[in-house]
Amino acid sequence: MQNGTLAAVDLGTSKVCTIIVNVSGGNIIEVMGWGVAESAGVEKGVIVDIEKAGDSVVESLEQAEKARGLRVQSVVMNTSGRHLSSFNNRATLAIHHRSHVVSKREVKKGYKASTDIDLPIDRGMLHAIPRGYHLDGLASTRNPVGLFAYKLEVESHIITAGLASVQNLVECLASIGVKVGHVVANYIASGAAMLQEGDEERVVAVVDIGAGTTDVAVYKDGRIWHSFVLTIGGDQVTRDMAAGLGISFEMAEKLKMEYGSTLDLESSKMEEVSSKVHQKYGISYEYMNYIIKARVEELLEMVHVKLADMAGEDTAALTGASVRLCGGGAHLKGLPETVREVMGIPAVVAVPKRLAGPYPSLDDISFATGIGLVLCELAEEKVMGARFLSQDGFLKRRRTRPRINLPRISIKLSRGMSRRTSRRH
Picture 1 (cartoon, one colour):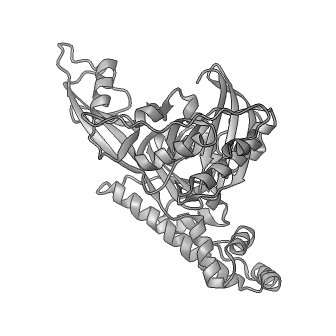
Picture 2 (picture 1 turned 60 degrees about the vertical axis):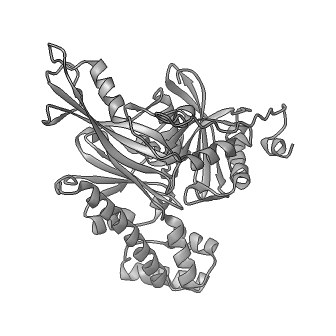
Picture 3 (picture 1 turned 120 degrees about the vertical axis):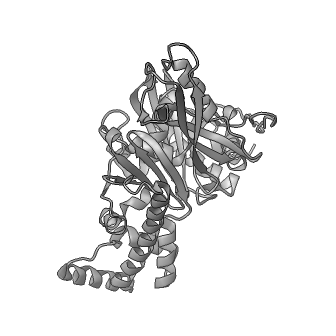
């Protein structure tokens, strides 16, 4: 997008975030509004109740629209959950012409070949991101154009999604009169918001701990290396607290955010906090944090095992790696220290990239995905240097498979009529 109003909706398990920006010349001029609402109808990143999820999106949208009297018609939004899958695919292209100098045309042709994959009928390709180029089977290069070679290999990181899950997203937004322009994998959006200058020379794992899922994207030398989703997040910690302490989920969440920690406090401080928690809530502070630490360590161990599996025999692949933590679950006190303890990798809770101007409210790590969605859309259908498929493109089946058309619901909103009212007509 070069000019106009751009809106992004981050639909998560516990919250919905909408960000609206004004774009001119491909740059963000200002943040026009944002809204946050409690999410309903979503479990582990996937819509399970379209009407409840739609109501949640409406509340977030109307908050964002209210300040400027806007009416959002189209959005870019995220998707997460078990239905996402990723793998790396490599294609080889012979350089036949006399000069044997690699051209842009051949790079494009090699990239297209690396994405020519036959998928099951219930899946579609969401992203195809170039991961690396190899000439004559030797070391990789970031830009092969102009180099001499007889053989070009292009490796792409392929991310696929379940058609039903994406269709439910589109249907949910259509039911409130909003079109979904693009769908972006949650970890790709978070990565776009959390990567910083200088990351081109290192391995960075962006770990987005949400309420229902933990989304991980690993970048090596500035390019995506691997990605995955774990269907466990902050809500699992809260549920275990509620069960172990015999309290409600809501109370457990409040305690986790206010007093929860994965670190052992100094004895003097421990006595003070322990006494306060026991007097106010009648529970054991020590046992509460025992539960929290056990569950967080379990989650981080799962992430570590996945990373080790992806590195495979390349044991040095994670040398010098670092972890960037984001998402609501990353607010937990002591998390970076526990990451280092469990995974042996330094971690930080970093501030997402700023969109425009001083908007401290958007500096929170909970907004990383929403900010990343805006950045992905601004890249003119590019994600971290590569195109991603539009909603229509996602639904195009390769080879002999038919194109699947989503049901389109057109709802005209009269001036002054709220989205909630329109849903009832």
